[in-house]
Length: 372
Image 1 (cartoon, rainbow, N blue to C red):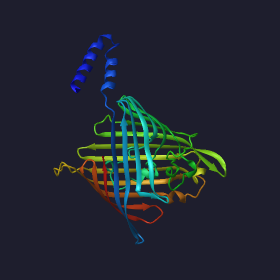
Image 2: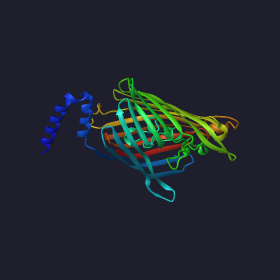
Image 3: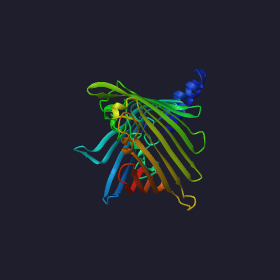
Image 4: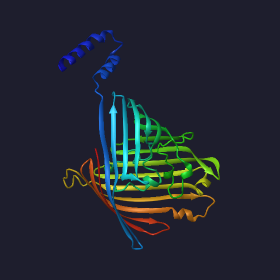
C-alpha cells in the first residue's frame, strides 16, 4: 500500500508542474507532505569527587552526582521545532539544597542557514561553555572558574534570539531579561544577579551579540558583547547600573594539539552600587594533546594543562585598594581525560589554587560524564 502512495504522489507532482508557479513552490509543498514529525530525547550528566587540601593541614573530600539533565525536542516540520532542557543538581531538592531548573524551552523557526528565530527560555551567547556545557566538551572535572565568576554559566532566561551565518560568520543576537543588579558583588560578580526566568523584571532587558568565524580549518575564533541597565537600589532609591560584559574566545585543534582560551571583562557604570568595583576581568588558557594516533587507540586520551587568572574586583574606585588583592586569584591544573567513545568521558586533574591574599589550596578531582 505504501508504494502506491509514493506512486500517486509522484504522479500528482508530474501533473502539477506545468500548472505551478515554478519548481520552488512545488518542492516546498512536497517537503511538507513527506516530512514526518519526530520527537528526540537526549541529555547529559556528571559525577565528581573533589578533594581540597589547605596549607593549614585540613582536607575535605566530596562525592556528588553534580548534574542530571534531560533534553526534549520535537520537530513539527523541517523549519519549526521545540527544544527544552531540564536539570537536576545534587541528586535532590529539599530545604534549599539542590536545584531543579528549566534551562531551555524555546520554539525554533529555522528559515535557512542565514536566518532563524528562537523564542522562550534561552541561553545568551557568551564564550564557549554557556551554550555548550556537556562534560565531554571541556577539559577538567569542574568547569573553569572563569565560567563561574566572569561569565555566570549556566546563564539562561526568558527572551528571543535571531541567529544564522552570513558571509562565513556565525551571528546571534539575543534580547532577554536582564540581571538583578542589587545582587552584584565584588566576590561573585554577575552570578547572583541571574533571574532564571522566574517572574523576571523585564523593563531593563539584556542585549547580547555574538560573532564567530570558522574560516580557518580547525579553528574557532569569536567574541561577544552584552549590555544591560541592571536595576539596583541604593538607600531605598531606585537606580540602574549600566553593565557590560565583553569576551573573546579561541579554540584550535590541529595534528592532535588542542589550544583553547577565553578572556572576559565586566564593566560597571556605577561602581558605588558594587561596593566600589569598576571592573572585573579574567582569562584561562588550555593546552592539550590527543595521543590517540600515537598509541593507535580507538578513543581519545588527552593530557592537558590549564592556567587561569581571575579578579572580580580588578579596578576599584573610592575604596581601599586592598579589595583588589582580596578578590584576585590564579590557578594551574594538569589533567588527563579518556574518551572510550565521544559521548563518554573519564577525567582526573590536580592543581593549585592561589589567592593573592589567602591560603593556597591543593585540588584533586575525579569525574565521569556522559551525553546522548
